[in-house]
Image (cartoon, rainbow, N blue to C red):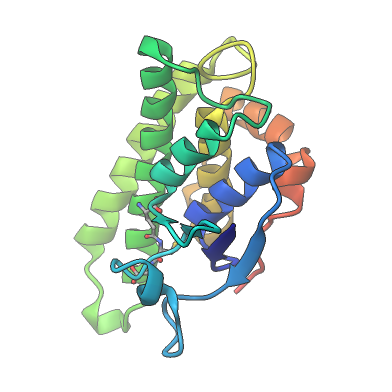
Length: 203
Ligand SMILES: N[C@@H](CCC(=O)N[C@@H](CS)C(=O)NCC(=O)O)C(=O)O
């Protein structure tokens, strides 16, 4: 299978980490949807990465769908409970982390517009979402090694990716201040080869 991804996309990084944790072989096709020559719209009409192209040519997107597909391959370790409310809870953590990414991307793109076209209230609105979500994740992570159980799962990985993206694009959020449980979670995650090998390039 082939994964279309840009090296800076946090959603694509989440999938690269899942593939690495599961030792699943794949071909990484680096393609930025922002470039004129991108081929991403040929496989994903939304024109976004990540997109996973199977050997059968079937394509899966977006990242939560790809994450669900990878679980169906039954490559250990399981990163999602097979069923039940436990699975819903992990997906809820993933959604919260992905929501932080959505708000971060919006705030970052807005901050890159010409200064006279930027909307400070719009950026602040996104930063509020990020702050509230981080506080909720800190509450959920307090007193435990992993957010949704006794082992690392998709939710933890998604949170680590979101926090890594804040380090890259919005360091001014200073998310580590007053959030010791998230700091400890990230220390554990960032030390893993799957995270270390997918650190986005600066720029
Ligand atoms: N919800 C999607 C978000 C994917 C996404 O927004 N990817 C960005 C890169 S970080 C993208 O491809 N943007 C191109 C565009 O919006 O045209 C997912 O989880 O995969």
